[in-house]
Structure formats: structure tokens, C-alpha cells
Image (cartoon, rainbow, N blue to C red):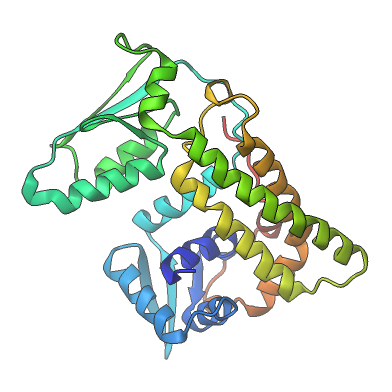
Length: 291
């Protein structure tokens, strides 16, 4: 696990439900469960501040980190993709974005490509990206955050004249490769689920182990956020293995959730002046139905 990626997992899975701010010592304790050194964690946190994902405030000798606008958007994009039920029908519109970024701003161009991929866009031709999902709000926030107004145009279309929908999908996405990754996940976590069920029945699962395993589960499932565009059901391939993987993810997650949150609450330390009331129910069951 890379420190920055794990930080986003921990904020999305736990910390956002407990005030969105954490003492660095508590964060170090959490991340040490996954073999990450204190120096790596402090260095990653500093870079997150420099890159405008985090802000830090100090109370006495202690530092407390929280996500700010850019970091919240990144975290919530992943959180929504992981936990939304996705059982929605396509509205018939393609969201199409074109951009032209000067060569001297190629770093910005690369960042745009990365962000669009994370939103589920596919590259259908040079400088032209498309998505069937209702992501207008997220794209406009991206444009604002990166000051992209001079370089991009976003529009919608109910039809593509030169290609039918399936031809467009084949241009922008490789569902065969994505399906293979889901199959690997299913094989691994079906075995784990069977083992967890038996051990839970025998009262052999500790709270600490559940915290570690739930975090690993979410962290591993989040990789599909980078490769699966989360299409509406009527655009997915038949017998899509992503559906089975999602059901398995839900079952394992819910089996581990209550003891995982119990353990998290023993190692989480918020700022002494924080008056936020924890949303424990949401931390236990974060699944949301977004249409």
C-alpha cells in the first residue's frame, strides 16, 4: 500500500464520519497496521499539504490533518463510486469533453487525463473523452479547481452519428480486461468470506483483525475505481462479473464492519476542540443509493 492511497482509504472509510480531522499520531498508528513507517507517513502528509489535498493545524505540540476542497473531491469521488448501488438506467446522454492544452502545460494535460479516467471517462479519439454517466457537476468542479476554463469544452449529446453506442464503448473502454480483474477479486475474496463467516460464528475474529481486513478489502476494491467506468446497467456486458464482485464486496464488508469500527474508535484521536458528533451508523454501513 502506498501511503497517500491508504490515507484516502482511511479518510473515506472512517475519518470523514468522525469530523474529517485526525491527529498525526493517530494516523501513524492506523497506518502502522499495514507496514508503513512513520517517516513515510509524515512525508506523505507533508506532500498532501503542499499539493492542496490536506490542511494542517497545530494545537500545542500536536498536528491535526484534514482534507480540504481538492482532497475532499478526490476522496468523495472514490467514496461515491465504491458505495453507490449503481442500479440505475442510462438517461440516453453522452457527456463529451474536448480539450486543447498548450505544450508548455503538459503536466496539466496529464493531470486532466488522470482525473477524467478516475471519473470513468474513456478516450474515444485524440483529445476527446466521453462518459454515459451524469458527471457534469464533478467535471465543472474539476474545471474550477484546475482553472481549465480556457482549455476545455463539456457538452452532452443524445446520439453519436458516426458510431453506434457499442462501437463507442469499444473505442473507449476494455471491458474484457476489467472483467478479468473482477474474476481475480472474486476468487480471492470468496475464499476469505467463507473463512470469515466460519471464524465469526466461532467468535475467533478480533476487532483489530476486522479493522485490518475491512481496510484491505476497501483498499483493494478501490482499484476498480481506476479501471471500471461504472456504466449504467443497460450498457454493461451480459453476465457482467463486476456485479457479482460488488455483491461479494458488500457481504464481506458488512460482516467485518461493526468490530472494525469498534477498533477504529480505540485508536482514533480527534482534536480536543472538535465538537463534531460521529456518524457511527454511516461508518458501519456507508452504502448509498445514488441515481
